[in-house]
Amino acid sequence: MLRTRLIVKVSLAGMAVLSMGMASSQDYPNRPVRLIVPLAVGGGMDTIARGVAPKLSETLGKAIIVDNRPGAGGSVGAEITAHAVPDGYTIMMASASLVTNVLLYPARYDPGKDFAAISQVSAQPYVLISIPSIPATTAKELIAYAKANPGRLNYASSGNGGLIHLTTELFQSMTGTRLVHIPFGGMGAAYPDILSGRIQVAFPSTISAMPHIKSGRLRALAVTSRVRIKTLPDVPPLGEAGVPGFDVTQWYGLLAPAATPRVIIERLHRETVTVLKLPDVVGRMASDGSDPIGSTSAHFTAHVRSEIQKWTKVVKDAGIRGE
Image 1 (cartoon, helix red, strand yellow):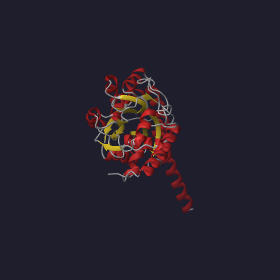
Image 2 (tube, one colour; image 1 turned 90 degrees about the horizontal axis):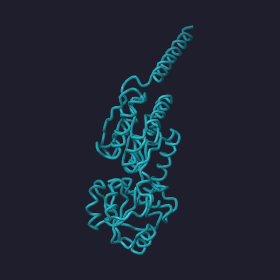
Image 3 (cartoon, one colour; image 1 turned 60 degrees about the horizontal axis):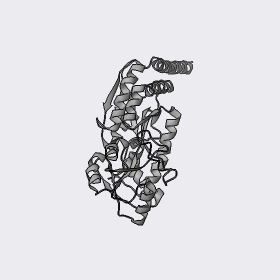
Image 4 (cartoon, helix red, strand yellow; image 1 turned 60 degrees about the vertical axis):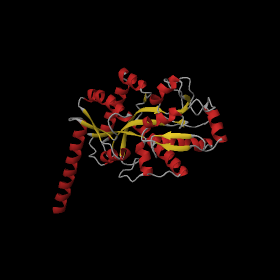
């Protein structure tokens, strides 16, 4: 009899907890939501987050508070999110560094298990550029020149293990070329050396390279996406320009802790898609060389998994180690 009462009490307690969780999900959100940005104020991710957050606040009916938590290349903010209470009140803007960081440095999160995907927000390709003194006006010509002159061309990156570094390593692997890596503390710091000719090749973002491309000081040879982009309509994708299958984009997307209720993930997804269709949001992203995405949770999950597979192979094949 005592055992029966105990079972009943435990069952009722479990039902109470379940009903509280369901009620909490149904009236979500009933207080401000924290949007963690794991990088510093002013960067590309922060710009995207602060462009989306006010609109998302309007559609949700509660404030979205952007909380910059930089450190360890984004790992600090990712760890905070991964271990936050999974109630929908802590979400994160993530990028490809979510994946690449754990391949190079110790981290207290698993990008494939510790997060629930809400939606990919945007995608921005890189552009393969060279200085005019290099005898190459197309990507195919650059590849031929690099093969004929192994180790002669220097390339810039935003830092060891960053996505631009890994993109260039992938390019070398797929083309059989050998370039010399010169890492900088961000691509902004690399431009003086690029424009002076010390660095001959790079994969910068389209938005940062555009002024120098327009002035003729740099040549745009190809973009890293599968398709042409609006900001450089005459520049072919690398897949069409001699490197079939090449596809790299810097992406941003929204994630929540893994155990966040499905109903909350679905609500956040719906509102995010609505925001990404707003003309002013589309226009703002276009001015930065980005395209709004608004993918489903399932598609974004698949994208993150494909990124894990791709960059794990690149890091292993190139023997890249964290510094």
